[in-house]
Structure formats: structure tokens, C-alpha cells
Amino acid sequence: MSAEKSVTGEKTEKGFVAKALRWMIDNKPDLLFAIIRNTRPNLVMPGDGPVFITRFRDVQEALQRPEIFNVPYGPMMDPSVGPFMLSRDDTVLNQRDKGIMLSLIQRKDMQDVRKIVARLTEEAVAPQLDKREIDVVATISRNVPMRLTGEYFGFPGPDLETMLRWSKATQLDMFHNGDRDPDIHQANIEAGAEMKQYLADWIPQCRDRLHANPDGDDILCRLLKSNFPDEIEFDEQRIATNIMGTLVGGGETTSQALVQILEQLFKRPEHLEGAIAAAKADDDDLLYRYCWEALRFDPINPFVVRNCVQDYKIASGTFRRAKIKAGKTVLVSTRSAMRDSRELPAAGDFCIDRPAYHYMHMGYGMHTCLGDQVSRVQLPEITKRLLKLPGIRLVRGIDPKDKPFPESFIIGFDIPPS
Ligand code: HEM
Image (tube, rainbow, N blue to C red; front, side):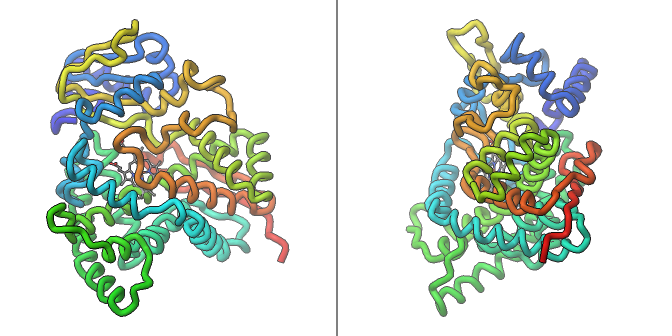
């Protein structure tokens, strides 16, 4: 994205086309992507309009070429959290920081993550039981991930309200400010400055606590216990940026995914029944399958955005090949890829036996989500706790006016037997 144009190229003389495209992306994304996928799957719009990449194989190809298709997030991330793995492609910074973080977020932790999420969800639900209704967004989908950021990643922040403000301000600018609204950008910069200030006190406190008691074992503690040689330049600033990244990455994304999963299940009573049965049987793997499949019908993003930095021919050697010129904005549609019937059998049907690689909710390739494993546990576990509520029903779903994040999602239930 350049500073002058939005992802759909709104400022061109063909602005009406851009507006129509944007309307379709916001309101009928699956229809738009189906048309593109089945006619011109790698659609290069003229002028400063974008390129759409819509088929499963081509989306994989684009996201495996970080040297050609660069992430566009630097201008929003750098002034806020500083240089970050998601704002750099194929660099020392990206390789080193992601490598270190991945080595510390261990798969064996996931049992504990599940227990923490279960407890946090129960604690959030308990005070609401008498009311027979819960606003999932106000009480659970935002609060639980933020509190997990405190307990597992080691970044509790001064209070929940501030954490939620930081989470929203950073997410809005970094991923949803295609029009470059200066107020949204400023709020992100201020959130970054506040987080840095908080961590400038918090990190030395954690270090002191570790000296007194080396048992601390959250991700920040593990970073502080590690000895990184000066030569690799992974200093305290890097630690702070990566810890901030866990808040930026894991807050609104999880909240949005959770309510969109629930909404899709409520739209399909027979599958809701199956998911409730899986919840009651504590079948965590099956519930994960229900969640990931439900999210396929309304993923949190229509695409991930990339800047093409070298002329490139996508799908070379096929009839759908297309030349993409350096300077083009490229909309790599993971949403469309997950509906591509050339790769996914019965792509329009709700199927819980799809292989994991069919899902691109957490991105693909070099920038695949750092919180992938955590999310595979967190989302199904919260969903499970909610589906276990007796007589669970939808009272009010997502308000379509709430863009980009759902602000309310109300479920009802019967009072559980004491
Ligand atoms: C349901 C929840 C989540 C969803 C849907 C999600 C989605 C994504 C996606 C699609 C990307 C790739 C973006 C791109 O390629 O442009 C990504 C990257 C990332 N996510 Fe998540 N995420 C979630 C939760 C989390 C959590 C809990 C964390 C906490 C660690 C996190 C941290 C990150 C980081 C640091 C990256 C950048 C990875 C890199 O550049 O290599 N995310 N996420």
C-alpha cells in the first residue's frame, strides 16, 4: 500500500470500480471471489488498482515468495511497536525473532494454555449465570485472550481496560486503516508509546523477580532467562517489541474469530447440535474441527495484503498465469483459497473431516501466525465452555454495522442446575 491509495485503488479515475469492489469485498466477498476465481483467477486491475489472487495453489505460491510479495505493515508498525517480524520479509530480524519466539512458545505448553483458558472463561461466565444472558464480546471474547496475554505471554499490562485499548488501537491501524486515517494512525503510535513505557518498568521488575525466584515460566520470563550473545543483537528492545506483538496479534483477532465461529454454528442447527455434543463429550479435537470449519464460512480477513516489489509471473505455465508488475498492491485471498473447489472437495459444504492444510485462517508461508498453536487451543476451549451452557441459544448476533470488529454478540441459556 502506498500512502496515497487504498488497497482497492480508490484514488484512481476508475474510482467507481474501486468503490464497487470495496462494496463487494465488504458485503458479498464470496460472490466476488467466486466470480474472479472462476473467470480470471489472478485478476490484475488496471492503473493503480490491485491484483487479486484467488485460487488455493496461487495463494500458496504468493505467500511462499516473501522476496517478491512484501508485507506492507512497516509504516504502521515501525512507529508503534518498532521493527517487527510481521513488518519485515526474509530478513535477519524476521528469521531471528520468529525463530526465538517459536522456540519458547512450546507445543507442550498447550495443555496448560487450555487450562488457563478454561479457568478464565469460567471466571468470566460465572457472574453472568443468573442473568441467563451473556454478551460474549463484552465479557469473554476480548477479556479472555487479553488475560491469557498476561498469564501465558507475561504481559499483563496495568489493567484490562488499557490492554483492550492498546489491542484495538494497534489492530485498527495496522490491519484495517487502508484509507490511512491520521487519527487512527496516531492512536496506534500512542498505544505503542504507552506499551513501551509500561514494559520499560515491567521488564526490569520481572528480571528482579526471576533473580529472587527463578521459577517464573511465562514467555517473557523465558526470554529473560535466555542468554543471547551480543552478536545476534537480540536486546531488551527486541524483547519488548516481541512481547507487544503478542498483544497486537492475539486480541481482536481472537475475539472476532470466536464470535464469527459461534455465529456460523448458530446458522447451522444440525452442526450446532454436533458441536454441542462434542463439547459435552470433551472431544477437543472434534470441537477444533467444528471451529475451523465454521470460521471458513466467515474468516476474519478477506485476504492478506502484499506489495509486489519485483515483476513476477504467477501460476507460470498454466492458462491462468498473470504478470504482476513491481509496485502493484496484491490482495492474496486466503478466504477465496479456502473456498476453491479445485482443492477442497465440496467446498460449499460444512465438513468436519477436512485436512488441516486446507485452512489458512492463520495465514500461510513465512508469516504464518506465531499464535497458531495457542489459537487452535484457545478458540475451541472457549467455544466448548459456552456450548456446555444448558439450552444455549442466540439472542442477538453480530451487528453488520460493527466494522471491523464485532462489538456485541449475545447468547442466552437456562440457569444451570446448582
Ligand atoms: C484467532 C486468532 C488469530 C488469527 C485469526 C490470526 C491470524 C494471523 C494471520 C492471518 C497472520 C498472517 C498475516 C499476514 O501474513 O499478513 C498472523 C500473523 C501473526 N500473528 Fe496471528 N492470529 C491469531 C492469533 C494470534 C495470537 C494469539 C498471537 C500471539 C502470539 C498472534 C501473533 C501473530 C504474530 C506475531 C504474527 C506475525 C508472524 C510473522 O510475521 O511471521 N496471533 N496471524
